[in-house]
Image 1 (tube, rainbow, N blue to C red):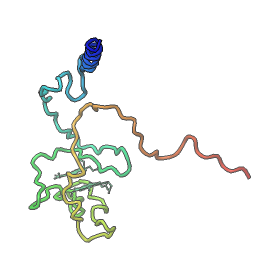
Image 2 (cartoon, rainbow, N blue to C red):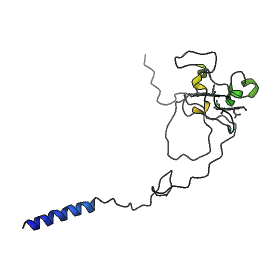
Image 3 (cartoon, rainbow, N blue to C red):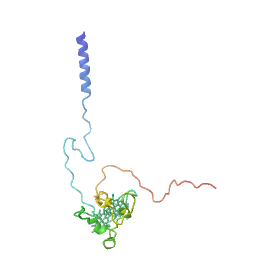
Image 4 (cartoon, rainbow, N blue to C red):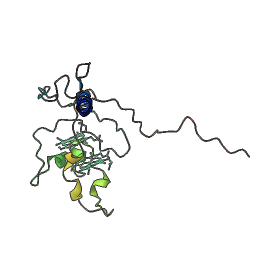
Length: 160
Ligand code: HEC
Ligand code: HEC
C-alpha cells in the first residue's frame, strides 16, 4: 500500500514538471527592432540611412523641444578645443551666416542668471540638438502638443 502511494505522488510530481516546460509559441517570432531573428542570434543591422540635409527648419513637437538640426554636421569639430557650430550659430555670426542664433536660454546658467557668454552647460550642442534621417517610426505615437488657439470646447461665457 505504501508503495502505491509513493508511486502516485511520484507520477503527480513528474506530470507537474512536464506541465511547467516552456511552450513554443505557435506564431513565428517578430520584433520591431530585430525582425524575425531569434533572440539567441545576432541580427544583421540595416544599412545606415542618409542624414536629411534639406536646410528647411522643422516644426517642434512640443514648446520646450530643442529644434532638430536640418543640415549635415559630418566633420564639424565639437570638442574642448573648438566648437564649429558657433562659427555660424553664435549671435555675433548669425547676420553673416544666415543661421538661427542660439536663444537667450543658452546664455543662462542653472541659477537663472544671464551670463555675458554662452553658458558652459550649452557648449556641447549635440547633447540636445540632433540631425535626422527619414526613418519610419518603430512604434506608434499619439502625442499631441499644445494648441496655438483654443477653438473647441472653450469655457462658456458667464451669463449676466
Ligand atoms: C556653416 C554654417 C553652419 C554650421 C557650421 C552649423 N549650422 Fe546649424 N544651421 C545653419 C543654417 C544656415 C541653418 C538654417 C537652416 C539651414 O539652412 O539649414 C541652421 C539650422 C540649425 C538648427 C535649426 C534651428 C531651428 O530653429 O530650427 C539647429 C538646431 C542647428 N542648425 C544646429 C547646429 C549644430 C548643433 C551645429 C554643430 C554641430 C550646427 N548647427 C552647425 C548653419 C550652420
Ligand atoms: C541642454 C540642452 C541644449 C544644449 C546643450 C544646446 N541647446 Fe540649443 N536649444 C535647446 C532648447 C531646449 C531650445 C529651444 C528653447 C530655447 O530656445 O531655449 C534650443 C534652441 C536652439 C536654437 C533655436 C533658437 C531660436 O530662437 O529658435 C538654436 C539655433 C540652438 N538651440 C543652437 C544651439 C547650439 C549651436 C548649441 C551649442 C553651442 C546649443 N544649441 C546647445 C537646448 C540646448
